[in-house]
Image (tube, rainbow, N blue to C red):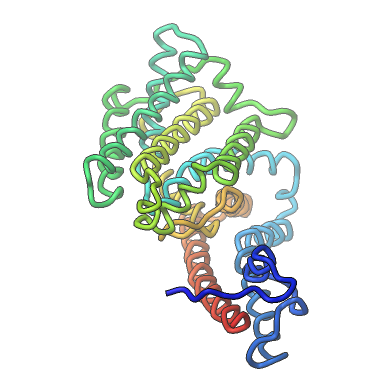
Length: 368
């Protein structure tokens, strides 16, 4: 059990708590443990490596941007930057929703099909003579409905893994989209939808504002709200979260609902860009969203990930595709390059886990 520790002269519980906090500080501030200066030097090296690994997604994106700028002068033009932002917007929105699910050790394979179904529903509502607000509401409600089904069936149906549930809704949503549209695109969208997904201010697309707003809301929810702490707790250690009274089932349902809502929002952007709804939209978009989150450093084991890094992963995919298109590289190579980037990101995550473990051990030795 725990051993009581007496307070020395001039010590207070607050000072002991502050001294016991684990923080990453420059070498000079690290207390000398076994090994003296050599121990501090090793700790400094681990700290530097850990910082580099945590900044890995941003560093990878910066490196890709530099290489892209050197490979073609067209890349850094304002028009092309706008194209990258616009093309990455749908992936970014889906990645934010997918991040919430992955933080709880889950996965949502249905977002691409949900996007397609929502665009078809929106197009049908518009063809019935309704305006922008109702069309937008219908697309968001479609995403919300699919997300709710995913969460409720997984949690309260006691399905062993969300892969099974979301794989089923992937097929159901795609089938419904094909059925409702007779397998053909439905053309026409209200001006409000076109303005959101297909217009821009000079070279800067409106869709980028949508991504920024959604990212800000998600960051506040995860970083400032109790609900966000619950998400990390449920993903980090579900049993411990349950014992502390966190409503784990409700938390898990909520992230699937929000992932579906994000798919509905992505449907608005897609429909706005094309002024249509189609059962073929969103093909493999679920894999892009998962790839963006993993490239951004989130762990499939749950409990670790950040909205900013998910956006970095989404824009990295967009930049890679854009520069390969500018270089007139076969589209098949895009899949290979993105796959290699995913492997590099996963390996960096494995290395980071090992470095973090060594860092904790080193700190324990120094504080002993």
